[in-house]
Image (cartoon, rainbow, N blue to C red; front, top):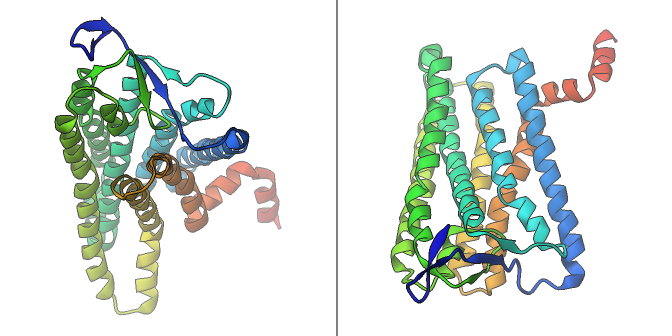
Length: 321
């Protein structure tokens, strides 16, 4: 594959060098490697347990948990697109990515992160129908509707980053491109180009607004209606039960947008480059790590199903007693 060189000629594909965290001293490489590896294994195991639990446990065959396994699958895919390469940067290994590998990583990372935002909106809609339109829930949230909502979220997110990725791939680069990040993030690659970066920076900003603020607005709108409905419930126990059905989702939404806020502040504030890079790493890892913890600790049905899978003999023994 050929790319445009900085002198305007069509040259062989550039090689991308991932700098990682510039000021991280060699003595900390191994401890940070094991921290990242632990997070990655926790993400894989935690989300895989949720996937298996929802599939094999009949009590969890509901719309809410169908969307949850979509979220768990996205967490696995999102981190797998970035974390293995991050780990290689912390060992005396390969810092390089080919032109096609870098842009494939960029596309997958942004597609999966967009999908998470849209799935969270769909989950908010499910909570809205559950609390505000309970009698219409079987009509509105049929299996066909659930599948269509999830498929729409995935398809929209898979299509949305394509213009930015394609346009960035046509920018001019040196033969060796130094990416000041732990993975091929769109903004980091654009900033490494010797072309005019303004159009691509603006396009990336517009896509970020669509992906971040529009879903957040829809989630907030759903919860405004939910709050109004809950406050009309006369009994304190009823209000508490209604709020408890939303608590896990609210925590996940809060975690997701907190990680976005950390990455945004690290980029916009007058901070050293390392803070910007760490902000991106936090965005890539924080939500996938916390999602399975939130749903296993806060949701009794998921917790019981995972316990049943993990300790079937103990559970059977306790039931016999």
